[in-house]
Length: 460
Image 1 (tube, rainbow, N blue to C red):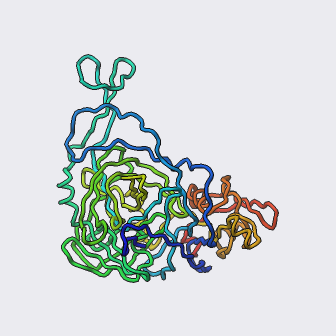
Image 2 (spheres, rainbow, N blue to C red):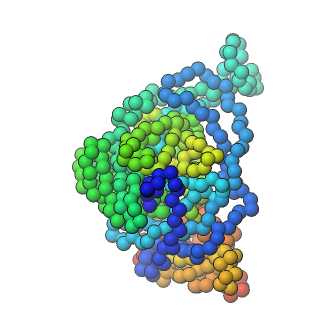
Image 3 (cartoon, helix red, strand yellow):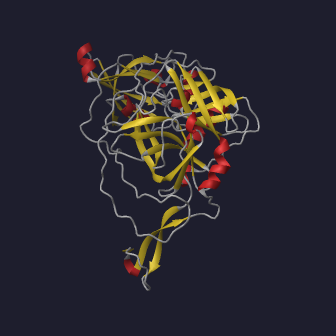
């Protein structure tokens, strides 16, 4: 859902329950009961935000600089609340379900989904270089063994472009997305991935939209249809009836390194500021961030991201899309902490939607579960934990012997007490893997072997 509404400075927070999945559905859905959020006692190990040295704007290479000294860890524990879980995938042939809750950080800092953003990463990175200690360098650097001085020095490939060149070459591959929702309207950003009208954006930009309008750089407007949306990765694909569009060039996000310049093009705060470019650098190439009941692996950047940027491109210095902007930390205590979906992840999901109509090779249990916390358990007189609410006939869970009312206590050796923990353990596995699932059934411990299936196998 787009998060640019009447007041762009406020973070949207929704928590609607989603309808349960029918037996004929080929995908898993989780639901939860309305209840207060659990407050974690210990800070999760993956919520550690290390302050990165700032990079001066521009692309010209300066002199070698001393290695940056480690900064003190200033991050604060993050808190959150329960959310509806399980990858919701919608294709153009599937009637979309009702609204769903938005994810954000657990803790004092809120993670805001920024409807349509384009974050850019650009070439040039900090690498280790050895210098002999014979002359005067004028630098105070770390000196390694054998008289070798170690410094950080920006290094750019020969085909690197200036920020102005990147903008001029790519702005026509970025579109503005306007959505009409049941509760208002929103604005986001999208990336033209194919010249015949396929556009990649965020799931939270277009999911549950009643109407989607795409405006290209030349000012033309098109009605768009949803090809597919995936809540788990926050990736969506839409299609407009157009030919000869300029498609963006996608790069290999696995090659991105910390310190590379990053450029974002998008529509911060709406159409009034359409086609805005911001720049910064890559702060981290891998952050495990919990959004709702999913743990997403994202790139971190300090390029400016605002509501309206979601779904836009993150460019490297060669003008290649290496990320799809998704979220930022929204708190007065943090500035310049934004996140983008790696392009390799986004492209895989997008191409699966175009070629197959759903995300392939994703392990599925074939169940609907609900998370019961202590407050709800006391109110209803039931146990706490992850309870099976429905079992898909012929699915992996059905064949393994799971029953409605079972509590999943452990999955493949990992203890499970929340839906996010179940998802995290499941996503480490592959389709076809046999895992042990520990259950609590009417006060007794039961362990079963479960063979994971994908969505197509569940539907068959």
